[in-house]
Image (tube, rainbow, N blue to C red; front, side):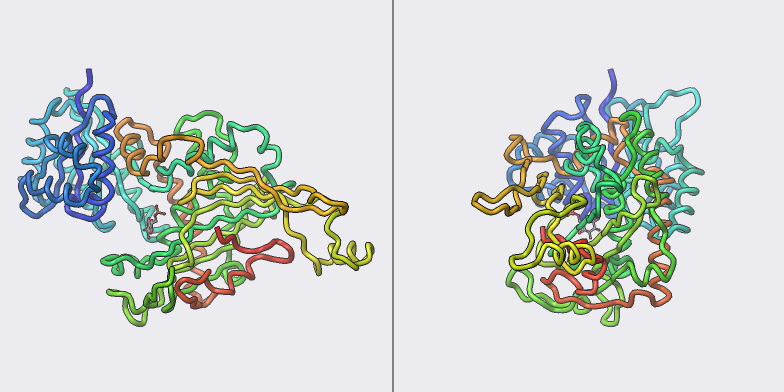
Length: 505
Ligand code: BG6
């Protein structure tokens, strides 16, 4: 029989703990997952009783979780500790030892901390012996979950990785990217590799272009300006969440569902992502900042006027990149990535646009001679809408749509757009679990598939660094867009010829 897992959350008083982790843990506890159960000890510096900590959590939970929380609350405790104080760490250890299973229980240390504290905290955990397997004893696992951002650039990510590797084994490190916890993101893998009908088409011979959008209507949230202004859209979303989605869309098939088999393929893909030189950054990337505008009919301030943002800030809140993947499968296929805050609406989506048939027979404009039609298609002065697009809607809609053309009823041979659609909401009763619920459960179970390996993080920073380097040289100057719009017009130019334009969700 195994003992309940002991989860230690460092940074227990922060937003992440109260708004994301505790609701997820409450839901897991209510569902009886994992079957051996778990205890939670929140750690922060401020003195607080167990009761006060529980009350703080309860106050922020939605009403429908209150009953579940009340049943779970006795398994939640709080320990005031400064991790750099050995005496406090001893007290924490004594507290954990006193829980069911004691030192033989699996221990998960969740760093819900500011990124600059990741290194020093693991150092202290290691020095105190809390994450170390002791000789002569057989404690169960000791794992550390590390939040994003993992590094600020390639050099800092490498330094953090090497510091971690001096203190922990790679299999003890769970670097989180909450996008991988989303049901629809995991389904990218299932959809691609369970269904054989798409794979023969999933390459440069049949795919014209892929676009990935993460559009948000929110701006910088209250209290986040300090973090966001030193981070920006590229580091905050593209380097991590978007490149994760990209790697799942474009990777080669794994030989098994083993975590390493999957992560090996993701790393290979990220390594094949062409790192643009400054000239390419200038033509293939767009960055911008929102100015005052209206979102959903409500007037909102510009980025520089947000609370806590320096009035002369040059941080981008929008990024769009035309990327290329140097593999046999994808060479020459543009991957257009776009993310922005304060856009017209919130949606995350992957669109795979298939090529036109070699001969375009249909929909000749009225009055245009067949030869002129042929010539216009050839020289690109006439573009036809691509009939075949596969849309993988990640959120808020969770759906898959395959578009194709059908003959419009009538005496003429006119083709009209049609689609087949699947929607999670209609197909399954249960709503998708929140990302953190799935990821916490996996970390407890020791399944690292949905967590990032050291080499994966470094491969994505290598790409991001090249773009940031080009920007630092003044390539792709920072533009502006009105809040509530679809972003800067310059981003439309990332589409060439008849490739089409950005999705509006
Ligand atoms: C976080 C970013 O990682 O993801 C935020 O730091 C962003 O800026 C958030 O708003 C978006 O997450 P989701 O799950 O709402 O798409």
